[in-house]
Image (tube, rainbow, N blue to C red; front, side):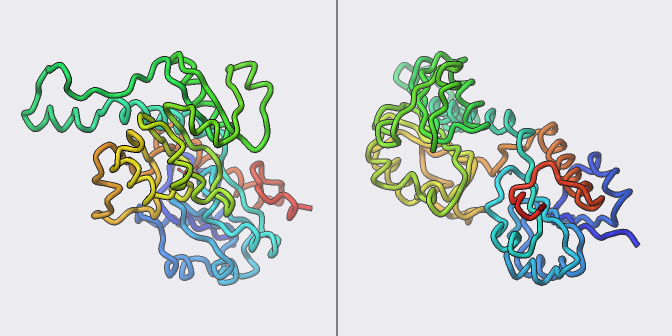
Length: 324
Ligand code: DGY
């Protein structure tokens, strides 16, 4: 009998033939995130679990899956939806899909930056609603070229956004856990303390992982350090930002706006003010939603699953200590 694998949402079928040969693969057809009850119902007896759309994998899910579970192959570079500690305690490898979504996510970050700076949303509404006017003084936005860009978290995606900034003639500042002398020379970019960077930048793009210590890293006091003309871009995780504080800062004109591909919670309820505030542009977590990136993410998740099911080391294990 083939080992059973469950994929909790639709992924690119074109990247699955190898896995399907090896395993009995079931794919949940609903595009929304699987709810906790569905997760508990879906996991018993699985050998491999491929959570999609941030489906939560906690100790209860792992225990309900039982001792047959050999891998949690998360879809995405972020894995804050998986209780890695609980998986490690049960000696279950957790894998992610890094690298292949870097450029796609950086494109969305930079797109949101320009959209928020140049008020694309208001422009499109005006054009559609018969308010087209070429008028001096209308819809002035912030200049992107030559402005100062701050990158919080100069990892792979942060660096890709920084490169785009350099191509726009921007001066790039960064703050990371550790200094990156090579990037400082090559991009170039300059290191700042978080406080100093916040005060200096025209645009701030967030790229740190969501952990207890980074939750609400952009809170009221942090926002208060920023320029009135500054714009915040978040393609990381909604929980990095204190959303109520961000909303108040934009509403009160203490910063100019925001472009958010992630919110807290996700999805936001339709009447969440974050979706309706002038100056705040929200897209529904589409950072990696290009044909190339999503297909490659499926391929990488399938490679991780296949490796473990064949008794090999998975290429992208985030808790390698379980592999011995
Ligand atoms: C990731 O890879 O973590 C993305 O947020 C999922 O699209």
